[in-house]
Length: 176
Image (cartoon, rainbow, N blue to C red; front, side):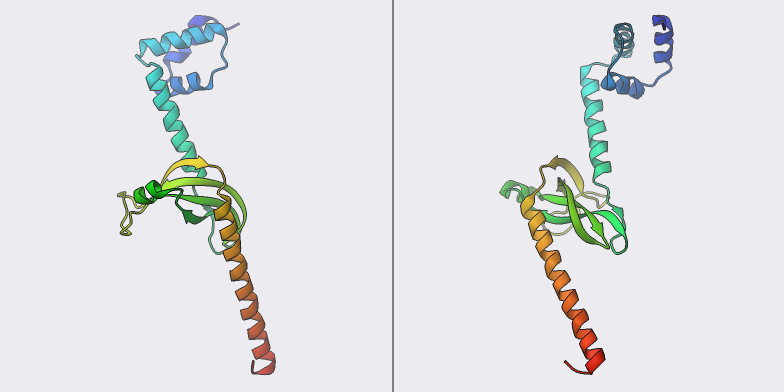
């Protein structure tokens, strides 16, 4: 059994963020929980600090979830398609819903999740200095957006097939 003094000594070596991470994770023995609470109290870290820390962890998680992975034109990837506003207030604030897709060759195949983003303002200029959209939250899959994306992809595929067929006919017969 580990002694409370050893636990306290270990907690003293941790940064404030590491202590807050431990508190967020939980699952401690009663003794370890008491020593952790004492360590937090000595560093003047309270429930407000814990809530801010957990909110920041959630923002980081959302940012990581909304990072596109893969290549737009080649191979598989996780890409965003669509842009819908949920209501008029979102339109005015330029908060839109985009859906993350598993894509092959830049074409959406399977919808994964929808997210609310705040991005460019109505004039097309970037609202933020770094030019990136800001993720606000994850929302239930937006099926209207999913079906419209599938419909657009079906139209593109039909046009590509017709174009390829026309090219083959022209190549083989020299005319249409």
